[in-house]
Image 1: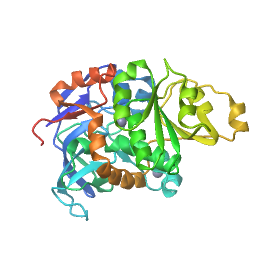
Image 2: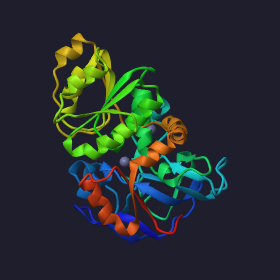
Image 3: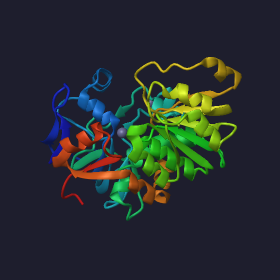
Image 4: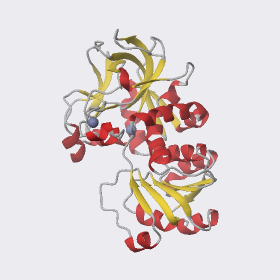
Length: 349
Ligand SMILES: [Zn+2]
Ligand SMILES: [Zn+2]
């Protein structure tokens, strides 16, 4: 069967390959994949960044894909509660379930965590066997393209409902107008935010326009002063902020826009130092929270949210391409000429 794989531990080398059909083991579910999203992590795997190469160390060819969904094709005899034919999305994080962090319900911090598509074979293939514990069944009739964005929606759900939850009526600032930023916008609006301000740069013009259609107030930080723009919406300052940009300047820009006692979630990964002045943080008792992926329980919330946000989530998928056009998919991503790109194994619909 066909799969999208990285074939060498070096920059590039991602193409469609033939891999063996999976076999169904105990405790597993066989999923016929309908589509999978690509994101910055896949770009980093394509570039073969040093930290990715050091942490993931897969064998080659390594099948990509940590954001995928499909239909249940078979279920092991020891698995109850998942029906053949059901639509489902997969939590790609496989946790040990026994360590200090797993026992505390903080699976994102599991010391043995392995991610499908990163440490283990991923879902950009025709069919994959996954642990039943990682399968979340979706309502019949769920749009497959909505299902394909539930994994990044779960990242935003963890940040905006669990790490830095807001109160109804709050003003939220989102740094970054990419898919993760706009997913924070949707979760914040669903949580009852009075206003959500999405901050981007001039090159994000199309993305900011989509954010406005999805209900945001937007700021182009290259032509507008962010602090003044936030103060126009929230004279006291924003209640919460989410950095989905991973830009080294984002913390220093976002922290002054928070009201006293405001909270900032660091969601985007920044691989450089991100300096900020600590005195205003101390004097105003502001707080900064790290956010890493999600916990198992986050999926229960995100799959429920995906149903109520279906039409908005569908608008985030700007490109749907067959496996055969994987090079084009990556170049769209690299040039940021897209929001979410979903790739599909042809003929699995
Ligand atoms: Zn991703
Ligand atoms: Zn663990």
